[in-house]
Image 1 (cartoon, helix red, strand yellow):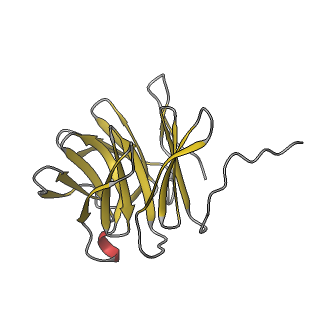
Image 2 (cartoon, rainbow, N blue to C red):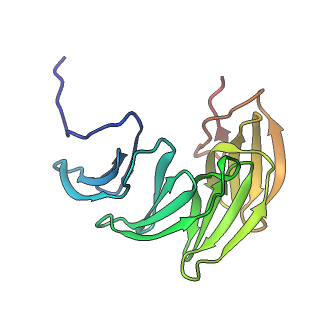
Length: 193
């Protein structure tokens, strides 16, 4: 088998990636990078962080990248990876930022440990804190007006996105539902452990 190296990217042991349109976005070490998938050339790079960290991840939504660094949420412009704003949303390990669930401009819906959802208006910088589900969740998907979330307690939650309240809980296992996927026939799939 022939192995072809597509790009050379420094990896500090925690690498995040996403594809949006014709671009591959990578976060590793201190940097965010963007590659054009047609030729794998780097089109943008930004050293966002000053020191290494392990609690990082990102989501590409609309024209923005929402980059999580433990207690902070960075907002980057996806075309050139420049930092537009940084928000300190968490206070300690009990309230670290889990990522952005969805973005309805100008509001970003951010998941926080222990089942909280913060609604951040990126224009006014106001944050509404909502105690939603009472338990942390790893994975989620949005279908219509429902947010489906797999929790650390082994439940699948159906959360109304308008009211931000749980409409149904289904016990699936003892703990940690790591993946939730919407199937085209309107079924929700999760990996059994």
